Image (tube, rainbow, N blue to C red; front, side):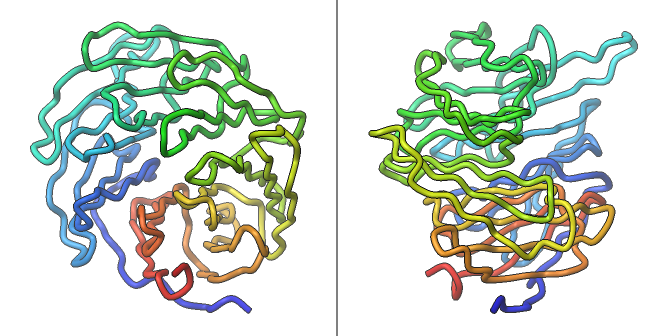
Amino acid sequence: MAQAEVHFRTLKGHRGEIRGIVFHPDETTLISCSYDQSIRFWEWETGQPKECLTGNHYVPALALSPDGTRFLASEWVTTDESRPLQTLGLFEFPSGKRLQTFTLETFHARQVVALPNTTTWVAATFDGMLWQWSEANDLPVWKHGLNPGGFTALAVSSDGTLGMAGITVGPLVVWDPQTGTELHRFTEPKKSVMAAGCTPDGSRIWAGVGGSKNVVVFGWDWKTRKKAFKKELKGHADQVWTMTFSPDGRFLATADNPLHDPGMYLWRVETGELLLHSTGIRLSSLAFSSDNRHLAGGSKYGDLYLWEIAPLTT
C-alpha cells in the first residue's frame, strides 16, 4: 500500500510551466527552467530563491555538467521574425554568466544531456535530430537524424558509453554518445517512450511507456539485446503525462494529466510496488536527486514541489 504523504516543501517564483529540473551536486541547490522565460536557482532545503536569470527566450530543457560548474539550457528565442531562433545557452554556475551560445539549424531542443567526464553535450531536437556540441568550438561535432517524428526521452549511461532515446511512436533506440550512430533499435514498445534509463553498469536498459491510465516498464539485457522484463504499473487515475527513472534505474516517478485528475506516483520498478502517491498536484516535469533521497516536481502553473523519499528508497 502506498504511503499517502504530501510534499514537504513548495517553492514559489516561476510564473509559467516548469519544463526542466536538476539537483546540483553541492546538495543544496536546485535549478529549474520554465516557459516564463527564466532559469531559477533555489536553496531547496529552506525553499529560498538564490538567483534568477531572465531573457527573451522560453526554456524547455536543462542539463548540468557532471562537475556542476556549468549548465546547458535549450532556448526558444522570441524575435520579430516569423520563425523563432533556436539556441543552446551554456552558463557558468553559480554566477549564471553566459559562456557560449550554440545555434540550432532547425527546431528547438526538447531534451539535453551532458556526457560524463567530458565537456560535450547532446541535444535532441523537435525534428528528430541528435546533435553533439563541444565547448571547444561553436559548431556541432556531429548530428544524426534517428527519427523524423521527434524524441520523447533522452538519457546517457553513467559511464557515457550508451545513449538511449525514446521516439514518438516507439521503439527505444540505443546510440553511441561519442559518434551518434545507432547501436540498436528494439522492436518494442509500440507506443511513445516517455522515459529512458539504465542501471549504473549499463547491463539493463529501461523504457517507460504511458499515455493511458497504466504505465508499462520494459527492461532489456544489453549484452544479449533480449527483453528481460515487462511490468504494468496500475493505479493512475488519469492519463500518464510525464515520468522519469531514478539515476540507478530502481525507481520510477510518474504524474497524471495536470488538466484532469492530477497526482504524483513513486514506484519500485522491479516489483511494481507503489511507494508514494500525492494527489492534487499538477506536474509537467520530475527529477530525482543523485542519491535517490529526494524527488522534485515542476508544476504546469509554476510551483516546485519537493519530497523527502529517503525512507522509501534507501
